[in-house]
Image (tube, rainbow, N blue to C red):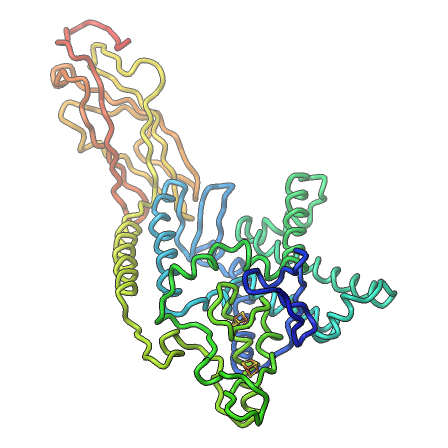
Length: 478
Ligand code: SF4
Ligand code: SF4
């Protein structure tokens, strides 16, 4: 069953998402304007995040942008540390750590992320809705304009608004792209004609259209039907999690000012009108609540006007709203914190052992070994990858090879340019007398890399015949 709300919209029944009408059509929301303490702080914080988002690719640390995910070169520069593709397994700890930290934050403070930091919320509330208000007017004017016929005024407003939205969507897409191609790369893409790089141009157009569609029409639907984080809420929160909730003990029974026996809620519906997902927080905690705190500011303004204490809607736990005490430390908080500590320690240890160069020893094709008068020979192609942004000296150290084994190589010291790689053929030779007649001999190969001389070792199998070697014969392993 549905009922008309104070806003004139048809409010669907509670078993359905609030933005779906009885006939299944979309109810397009126009949240009313609100001001207050939380709105002010959210705006300041939102603009700080927007500035940070656009600034990071411009800030240089150790010769690279603060964050540069260089997919083309398979190098990832993150706040001065460069990771090569070979270091990606280390990111497992980082990603799992971020995930568990998200669990911890959600258990403690509910959807703080959604309301204050999520890029979707930040850009929708602080950029797109602001422009919409500026062009179309307040919520009532916007609803009226939506319902109006296509008059010249409506067409002009729509063209201007969608034009500005399209430009901002493009800028937003460029902002994301800068993290993957860097600012000079982005400049190149922008200044080259589309036909010089069709695939990139098509990708750019499609991505911009998706951003435009999201912020122009889809909006809160992303939070309600797509974002998996919202669906996880009930599993991560408990009665002590800090939420935005309505104090029913104080507010009920609702009634107009002066109604005998009525609680503090005067049924003005301001909390519903300002809600960006269209829900009524008085119906209890709902997963559609993105924790934006608009309803707190709206209700506080009403209470202030009526000379009643603020906080009828407030940040509190379910226990707190029911008159109990909120516990900060609970078993789940301890478990999440312990897992984060363990992951952090493992990650710290793993990162401290990240080598400046990567070495891969690859056996050359053909026979695995040769035997001639000089002994048993194994041929390899050794790949050295300089993972740093500086030229790197590599010195090959053959002093630790097993007794009777020598190395034939064209050069024992060479320089690798920044972020480049060099492949050197090497032949390891074991004297017949010292070869232990076993199919495999594990050998440690050492190299010294960089100015600070990092010793890097790799183990490989030196192979040879199992049978007793004769002298002055030539045979191979095929
Ligand atoms: S804004 Fe406050 S007083 Fe008004 S309906 Fe909501 S809870 Fe009640
Ligand atoms: S219920 Fe309140 S906090 Fe939740 S989304 Fe609506 S206005 Fe924001």
